[in-house]
Image 1 (cartoon, rainbow, N blue to C red):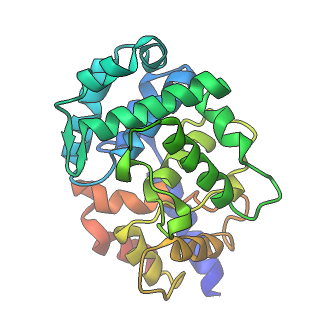
Image 2 (image 1 turned 30 degrees about the vertical axis):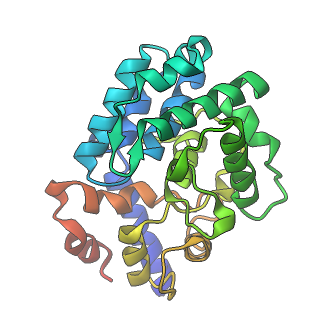
Image 3 (image 1 turned 90 degrees about the vertical axis):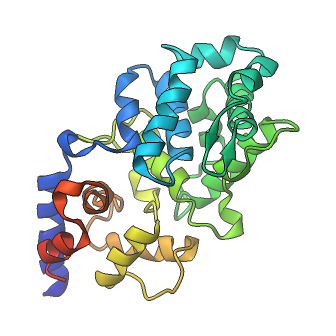
Length: 267
């Protein structure tokens, strides 16, 4: 009974809040400005990598980066020499990230695109549809970006799942690029949404604890996988379906925070 009750509540939440009008303030909004997948996948990786800290600062940082890159981030990476990328972003600061970290990420993308044709094609090299989750592919992808950055180091902008991190920002990136609905723009074909992992941060971790999806003490990769498995009981083919709607209450002031979410779900 509780399972069916929660499924109805979650579906109601999805129908009510999984809409474009609830996106702002969210770095996802930057992806809507790019119709070409080759631009969108670059913007998505930059925006998701910087998606930590105060949301106002996130939007400011991402906006500043994209302004420098111009109308086509793909053309910017393809045409701009590495030394110029470092110069363009040497004054960049976003919390723990400095210009050298951002430039390293961009150089990693630049080399990956040159070598594989696109970020998507690079990711799919490590993807096996027989894998239970996206984790093996995500691990291989993370290592490829880091290796492609040569002697530079993107630092914490590109975490690696094999160290146990929930990799919230990378999983957020995959949600944006793999899923397609009123909110997530998609663009990457050939990857099943059923393989995705919930982008887990402390807010989502608390909510999922209230839903009874985890009893773990830390918001790490094991918890993210456990929570994703829990969501599959309600949405087997798309376990991250409810992520956007559930996280609105921690982002938008007009939705009155987690207390309103708890009341809505009756948990």
